[in-house]
Image 1 (spheres, one colour):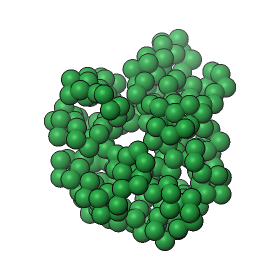
Image 2 (cartoon, rainbow, N blue to C red):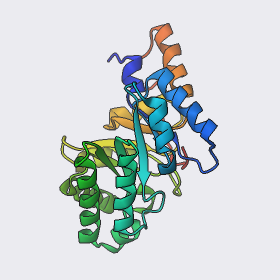
Image 3 (cartoon, rainbow, N blue to C red):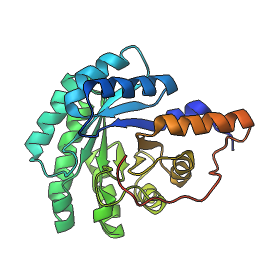
Image 4 (tube, rainbow, N blue to C red):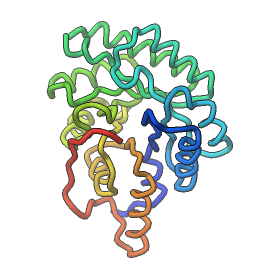
Length: 245
């Protein structure tokens, strides 16, 4: 099936989350996202005012992370962090669930925390993505985390922070897509660095991918488009277990 360059670009949350990035690096990241028309720039909470300023007037949205990367902040701290980001102009929040409580089986805690963040987002017409950090969960825990996220009002479930022991896999994307209703979308992240991996994630059910390799991915897409071979099908089998954006 055919796919457009815009279709691919609007799957990409351009990531600028590395701890060593300077304000100039953040600006460059915004320029890349604007050049290709990415869905969002996903930056650190501190960077939100700068990102909002850089993206003003465009259809590239500012996005940030909450409780990142370990998910072990107190719920009240996560809520405050979310509210501050929204005050700064953020439009999408990617929160890390409390991985320890998820592994413990404390469903009430996990769902209640997500619900508080979902309310904070939805009260400001923003959306919430829940990062499961799938590398630390077995398949049953992944499915349960998806169901808890949906019950709590999340808009997306997301595979990984990119800073765990492994990143996105096609297996996990497909498992998560099957675990939630069509009302909840799936985002893949962690180790996605090629167009074929983006297309494979799309085929498995993801509508967003968290990437820092936006320029490389979009240049691959442009080259295939110029050759008349850009389609929804990857050209080669892919699978990643590596972490990092």
